[in-house]
Image (cartoon, rainbow, N blue to C red):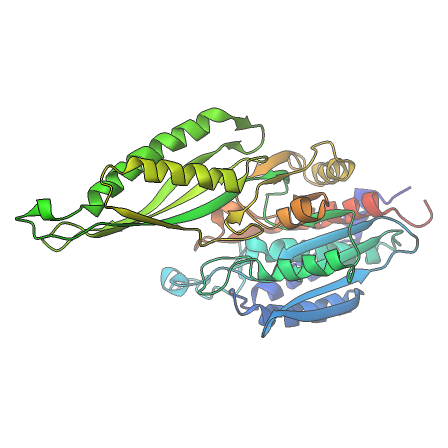
Length: 417
């Protein structure tokens, strides 16, 4: 019989688990500086009995790290994966000046929450998986199956020349080539408040440049107004968004749409010659990025009445697809998903339900490219991530450690059972 959650909870070293997370937050790893955190992970993974710990650069000076806890038999293989980089901390110190939260990497514990950049997104999830392994060791559990850990960089966008999932691309390529073993199930440790996300949205960003011809304001007939054309385009895009939303609704991620995010343009007492628009398109599982982008371009080019206006469209945020990130989903009745949900629900009643990810992250590299079922699950609240309010509940984190430990035993099996 596998160990009960009561027995696991009794074996949990809360001081160690909290110190692990505070130490992780204390290592600045803003995108591009992943090596600082990877050095800490290298020490922790080795100290916690993870074998074959390996680092390799996916770009010069920017390493991934991975390792394995080998099981005692030929059981299933589980992978915990998360990204090592965080978003920037611009303005954080000024926002919290004079407060104990002033240092974004200080990890103070305030009213039962640990504060700091990366606490939720997603060092909390990484540390939950590592602390779960240590909990199993303290409880004397010997696993039949293997547990892999992989922590990759370059997931977050916002830093120049980065944020294209270069880290996970390199790791997935190693699995695809056979250099690394293929997992049977993947838990990506994005913050979900311990819900389990079997589905996520897809997206692309489009940057639209509209070019006309400037003319002095007194003779506007000599110009071609890019600002007027942008108005025609936006009107058509909003109508297109309504049409997209009316097509279908996904049970977990809702409806698709597009959102115009920026507009820049104008002339100096003259007919505006150039305007730029940016938008983001949300896609549902099953929608094609190529088809969606082709539809978008037809709408944009068909909206402009002045034939002399030129339009250029670029897609700057390629991830697992040249245009953006694909949507993904797995069967909600997948046995591993059901086991994870049950483990979480037992550890923290009211949590563990199946929900849809309102964000894009990197499970499509596994689900769509490798055909490996993957979900998101970890403590932390995505709603406070990327903000000055980023923090994680200690209670939720520790319950997550117990839940992950229990799930590992359910998935991998325990020697002697």
